Length: 163
Image 1 (cartoon, one colour):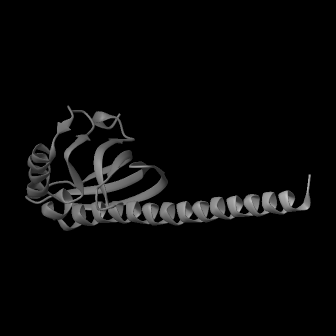
Image 2 (image 1 turned 120 degrees about the vertical axis):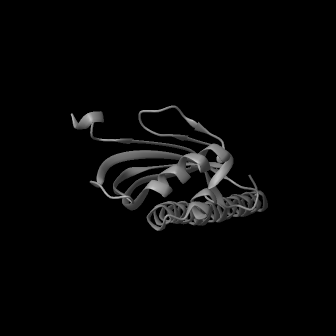
């Protein structure tokens, strides 16, 4: 092989490696931004529950979102989620916290997993209800690059009836 060919080959290899490295660092930056946005969405979820802010809570959902609560059927669509949550917000005040265990992003979809604790205090008096549980949320990237909750399943670590 001649030196000119080897030099051109080396330049192409270097250019290709630089391009791949640039894409990799860009992908890493996008992943970090997506992860931060998803963690922020989870913080807003908690904050909206604790504040009793139904509009803020609903702003976190896709139109065709599905909530899968424990001991009941799925709540399908944003309108039905609003109806369900309004009933809870009317009856209880929330004191919720969570621990984020995992966030994974794959293109236009992501999931988040973790644990939570919550105390629901009846507004009309009565004993507070303590919940210790876990959740998985599936999020969908929107056309503007933001993330919204698309599916949410959560359940208690305590069996129904406290058993």
